Image 1 (tube, rainbow, N blue to C red):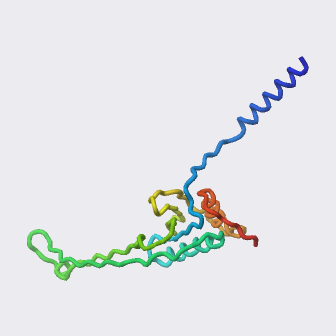
Image 2: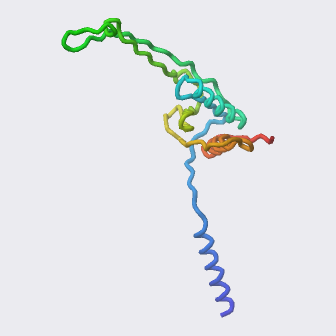
Length: 170
């Protein structure tokens, strides 16, 4: 009887401890042996480029290879627009100009694309080959991994995707 009581306590303890654990699921992806990343700002505004450059520096610190982003291409189209009813406007007669800017991603040899959005502090990680969005998150406000928590969030995200992140001692 004494052993039965101890055994039932042991079983109860195992059941309780197993309920306390949470299960995490990680989707494993095929990660190249030496993966490369390219960081792409939302646009060419200085604040966006500075934010993307900061993200690049965090990734470089992790030991992952970062490739230069492809040059942006600019396409400019001029059209003549007329108003309804046969009336014309001087501005319309001179033509309207539409300018498009975009990155030619076919020129990039990177395995992963990291899109950055400075105003919302959002990061999106995409596998270039499949166009699959692997991760999207918002960086916390503040400073410093070790001195910058932003870097910590980025590096943990890359690590969770299976990328070979190396944290350097400071």
